[in-house]
Amino acid sequence: MILVCDSGSTKADWKLAHQGVEIAAFSTIGLNPFFQSSESVGEVMLAVDVVAKHKEQVHSVKFYGAGCSHESRNAIIVCGLKKVFAKAEITVGHDLLAAAYATCNDEPGIACILGTGSNSCFFDGTRVVELNHGLGYILGDEGSGSYYGKKLLAYYFYNVMPEDLRLEFYKKFNVTKEAVLETVYFQPNVNVYLASFSKFLSEHSSHPWIINLVSKTMGEFMDVNVCNIPDYKKYPVHFIGSIAFHFAGILKLESEIRHIKVGQIISKPIQNLLEYFLKKEKIRQ
Image (cartoon, rainbow, N blue to C red):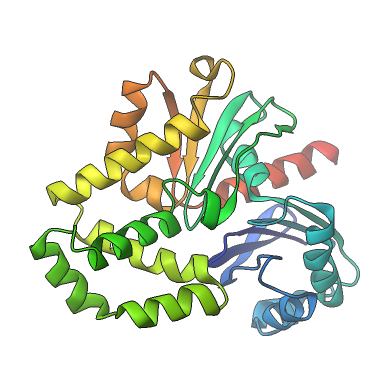
């Protein structure tokens, strides 16, 4: 059996397959080594009935997640998974690599993530070429859920948000400045907390102020994360994540302005990722 995972900071999607056929799909909380320990990874997995039932039969685990870009951090996830899948070969890699596998089909291209966080990479058909992106929710994450959450909260408390939207924002969240500052500066998983406010965007996606905010921020993401990749106009640019999927129309418009050739836009890469590895396993057989 092979178990494949795509994990963001908020949520992780898993698929289990046996002899080339999917037999189960489930979700857990996101397993990010910046915020999780090996012990908590094991606890999360053992709480899933499907895992408890089949953990001895799993021979391969392919885990790709946010925060898994360095060997020392990846070891946290590897150790936690090994406690559960003792007989399995475990591979842990960055979510950007999963995005590339799920969209590029072993062809050169640019893969972008626009979910709770944001990032981009160039994929040469075999490997991800390292870029100076992925600075996280404090320094970067342009166009991500956490980035929009910061903007919405700031504009709400600054009284910059239009009055009709401020009223709707208050009705939905009823947050105080003190409560937000306490959470942001003193509580864990701040990026996920900030991203929770970004749902407000899709609920009011036809409002001109929201359209302008999303367009401006999408443009910023493109300028920083796509347009500074050498020869970016030559390659298809693929997008993965809830923000990209829900605002695909604006994304395409901002891409067209910058002569970006848009490829796939998908909310979740897990199905494509499973198919990619099943194909690889079939080739090796």
